[in-house]
Image (cartoon, rainbow, N blue to C red; front, side, top):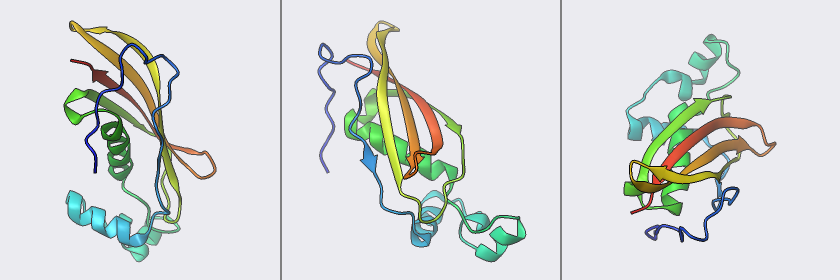
Length: 142
């Protein structure tokens, strides 16, 4: 894994796109591994009988797993210490088997607390383009 470096401030413009993060189809194994890694053992994410008893057709991904993918998109673009905030809005359930694509664009360049900063619009969407999670991030330059 390479360490991200800040893009050139002078070349950065509103509307510029971050390199997208394409993920393989979500497997049940991914959900079980995320349960262990996150400590979120809610059975609705791994137990199909439990999910069906709750009215769902199948288990589904944790919302915070999608948040982690957006964080990975960000840390592939800039070093983690540059990230000042990540505000999330959950839009739809991410189902087993869906391919998720994480994208982002520069929304604004400005000064914030005496630092050059960038506001980003981020999103996860499935292979049909249906938004699953939207977010806004604030990134600071040294």
